[in-house]
Image (cartoon, rainbow, N blue to C red; front, side, top):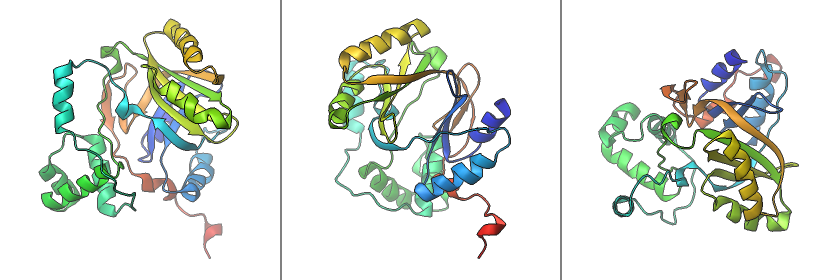
Length: 270
């Protein structure tokens, strides 16, 4: 299992790999340009890997909150205000197709979000002014989000809990707003399938994981939890490789395009 997990963690379109408890061994977060690319990878990429015996695919239709909005609450009000003053406001820029330069920028920033325009220009083979314009457009459209991660042993939230649940379709928006209001919640997404809600939370201990579920039921009584897991070892997070303790040991630049870039089978050749 570890060899399979490490092989998956080296793929640029696999943003996260977690060894989890429960009915599954590994939980992956995967990016793809479209459903065709994802299907190709699931059937002929991961489906052809030695050691893989079964897969289940959950498609995220709506993301209500994600890690860039989660707060450790380590800053005081003055520090928060200073950050707010320097933050670039999001404009009403529509989504647009990513160019090769945009993909290169995403990959470079996924490894070092503190990179200067000059460093990014050198890495991407263009000018700092071009980098500044492209980044401004990506941030204005909400296609890039700044995110600061913390080594989990250094925080008071070392345990990751993953919950799957069901909500009546008409209550999904209201329930999701209640769920995202919980401090522990890092991700709340609407899914397609029997379970239509995914919740990922950071908690203080295994005992606190059970207490969190009780608190969640009180906040969102319309949410019926149907399955649960605990991350035993997050091997990869947002492209960064982690050791068993949760410290960074390397990284793989993110690239959504590689999901559909597996070698074509001879039978596919016209």
